[in-house]
Image (cartoon, rainbow, N blue to C red):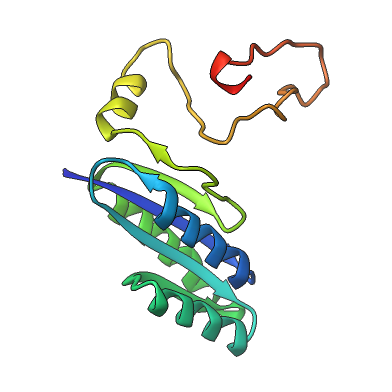
Length: 151
């Protein structure tokens, strides 16, 4: 098992959003260990594909796979291949192109893994904020306690 941390970003036809996501990860994700970035993107035309390639080149992302829209079968195969490849990592952060790490995150991989090994924890998310007020699709009444750090 690789003791490094991986970041995996999915994007479809939104190279500008992808670049903002990527830049936010590079700027604000400080996990205390080196991490690898992988990208799987799909563009519906040559111009969009070229934008993805230029962005990955600019940020020196070697783990990028970029497809045209008509290559949907290969996209699925590549997605499965990426997932298999990511199994070598101790942990992986999955993002889509509209995810933004908007403030510096300072945590260690050990901290996250310790939390995940807690039998009372079954999921974790770094996207929860004060705007999270409802979690039930049937709109049943629930209250969510806001941590004091977010107040």
